[in-house]
Length: 285
Image (cartoon, rainbow, N blue to C red; front, top):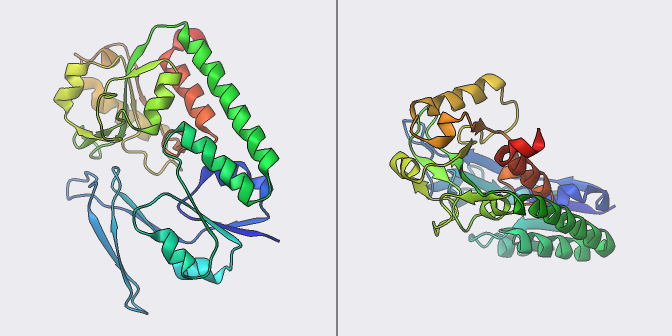
């Protein structure tokens, strides 16, 4: 029975779950924020194993998150294959030093996603299933693109993070993000598509100047499990004072809590479909 260790959650694995007998994860997760609750991208996090005194230093992502695979747990599971996303901390080399077979996969964008599915299929003896999955994703995305091509482009802002209960420390989807590709497929015009960073921090004044017609805010929804409607309404209420913004005036501020928007994987199709509904409600009613 093959055992696969999927480190830092790899959705290409979860969607091809029938290929694998067992999947395990071993990791330490967290998020760094300041005293006001604003997330801190680029912060250094030190983790020490008090039993062995081994220390590791990590850097938080654009949304203030960090994830540290527990190498001891992973090794103890004796997996046949470990799959990890591309990372800058030489995780692959450290896992290989434990005599583990490792795949390091780049999923930063749709072409890279297709390639990662191909690699996973090849490594697990499921090349046919992988090819079918890739082709199905291509067809579904092209269908959404064809529908949106007939419609006017809608200016959209996607907020990936901000200070809880305040419109400060705003982290948005930029031009090199996975989300920018999906927004374009769905017929949107990302107002920060000119930003070189994937998830830049911007000011409220910049947002006001660019005047989005639709705002999608998951800034307080990093944990997508168990989010209530009351929480979503509280996020929407934050924007009500910005009456000069077209999205606010027309009631098109949406608080969302779904990892399909932030984790590249086969559910990219669901993300494109959801964007299409939010961008073109007159078509989907």
